Amino acid sequence: MNTVLAMLVIQAVVNVPAYSPPAALPPVTDVGRLSVVVATTVSETDPQPLCDRPDCTSLFLSRYRDARTLAGPAVEPEFSARVEMGSPWNMSYRLALIVEERPGQERLVRAMAGFNQRTGQACFESRHTRPLNWTPEGAGLSHTTGPICVTE
Image 1 (cartoon, rainbow, N blue to C red):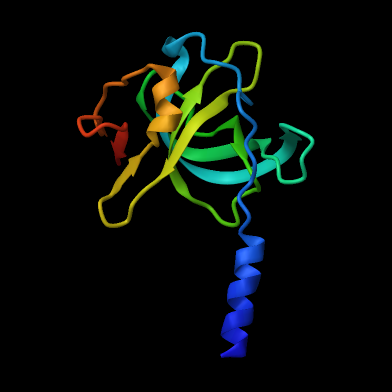
Image 2: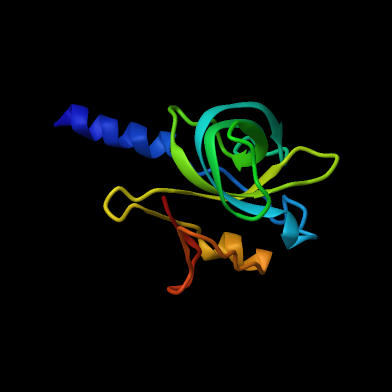
């Protein structure tokens, strides 16, 4: 019993959420540069902290493979983009992403969502998509229940 209690305390201490500074990312200036992409994570490197706090998120350079564009400008099957995260993934994941093409700069992931194993859908949080003021259309996309959802 003491081992279980110790593990719960350690998990509570380790699982501290990262701090995302308000307005850390610049606003989207052209929704025509946004794409909905389904891709598999490969790696996250080169973190660029978004503030001076020790628990602050960073913009990681993330590499993706097996990408498929569902809406917006086409993204290559293998691509990289900056993504705000607290730390790198510990394994590979298949994700739905909203990616912004930024001329003269690295791409930027504006939102990401994991796939629910039960429903087969990945739904973006409204707090990430609402500021985009964008309603993408395409096969595998739905938004009738509110958030933008992807079915692969």
